[in-house]
Amino acid sequence: MFPKKPTDSSTTHQQHSFDEARWVMNVRKSLDAELEEQHPLEQVTVSIFTVPKPLMCSHRDSYTPQRVSIGPYHCLKPELHDMERYKLMIARKFRNQSKSFRFHHDLVEKLHSMEIKIRACYHKYITLNDETLLWIMALDSSFLIEFLKIYSFRKVETLFNRVGHNEILRDIMMIENQIPLFVLRKTLEFQLESMESADDLLVSVLTGLCRDLSPLVIRFGDDDGVLKAQFHEFNHILDFLYQMIVPRIEEEEELDEEENRGGNNGGNRASRFLQETKLQFKRVFSSRPADIILRLPWRVISNLPGFIALSYLFTRQENEATATTTRQETSSSSVSVSDIEKPPLVEELTIPSVSELHKAGVKFKPTPHGNVSTVSFDSNNGHFHLPVINLDINTETVLRNLVAYEASNTSGPLVFTRYTELINGIIDSDEDVRLLREQGVLVSRLKSDEEAAEMWNGMSKSVRLTKVGFLDKTIEDVNRYYTGRWKVKIGRFVEVYLYGSWKIFAFLAAVLLFMLVSLQVISLVFSSLRLLGLRTG
Image 1: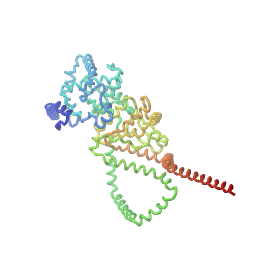
Image 2: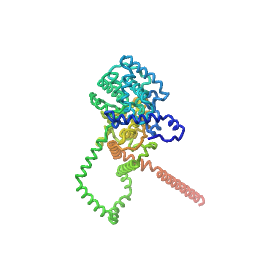
Image 3: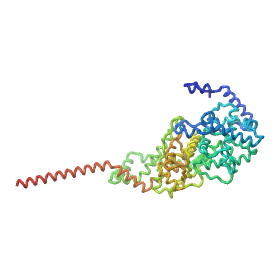
């Protein structure tokens, strides 16, 4: 698509900075490269995006690098140039360690054959020329490897200390601050002179980084061979963390749909018979005489004194479930492509808070594996199973960028986004955080429980509405269990019909007081008349 005509001064500046000749040259090179390469560019997925505007407007600092630029999106920002000297120090270190290793003749030249593939990973058009982009990849990949060595199983020396460590960690987990994982592998291969050693070190640093930064506590197995075999499926560091904590549910849903289709085909005759029988009953009972006869006893009973209160206790749960389902269907059916560009809806799930569920007898149980798929609710014993949540000063940035990456990269259900909405729904106050922490579901390194509650309550914005089967079923089961408890029913009955009727009680009290005052006045008048009668007599 060609650039549109400028409409203001900012777009005019972008128009002048756009190099049309380079754009044509890159397009031609991309088309020619597909014919020459063994792996066509169709297999390269776009995985490094810019943050959706609605999310960027909600919390800009969580998506904008503060200390270091990784990749081409923020490399030209002057406020990030202070870290460039550290990148040069690392380059000198590698050069001094191996006399035969030279950035230009070895690493940069080797990356040159991957230049088209690197550009294809970025969603935004990159105006940098080939040599500049490759030097950025070489320096930034070397910087990342040196920085992440502290998470290796080996004891290695590093140029970095803990000063500014957390700021750099937050920067390298941002969606716009990523470089392809195959660039990191190629850089490590050059440094270690072996792909096997490169994969060993890369698995070590990535798993260590995920243990430190993941918002859900992850327990990796002892066999690293599985992760090595899946390296081609991971796009970059943020994608690696996302795939570790978010299950793939698309294939499961497709299998369920196929099974349902097969079951429906097998029972066509039975379903037709039931439909015909149902139609006959509808014709009989939908007639006006039958309607009057059937409804008359119910109308008489429903007008009896005290029946309204009893009907509240028994039908409140069904009415709430029906209303919740109707709201969800209406909201989901109103979503369109244009809604993605609109400001996100500040919408919270209809689910009781942790403290309310705790009072109703619900017990929160931590799951052994930090995966969103372990979220479930057991209606038999009231156990709410949740993965262990790990909170520190880096968690909010990681959470927001995982949500932004999922919104940009996923066309199906937004599983992680729905999970954050669930946790946001059950956490309303510091009391909720305290209860989760005491029951082992939440580990917080923040200053207070109130700070943790504020962080989760700020996660209420999403790009689009979504439905996730197993999470929505869990929410429905929790609501049904909660509203079905007699303690909750009686409490709501007292709240609605006693506390909620204070105006009526106040009016009745005022009438009673008026009657008492009137009686007192009448009695005084009669007593005065009697006294006057006695005196005159």
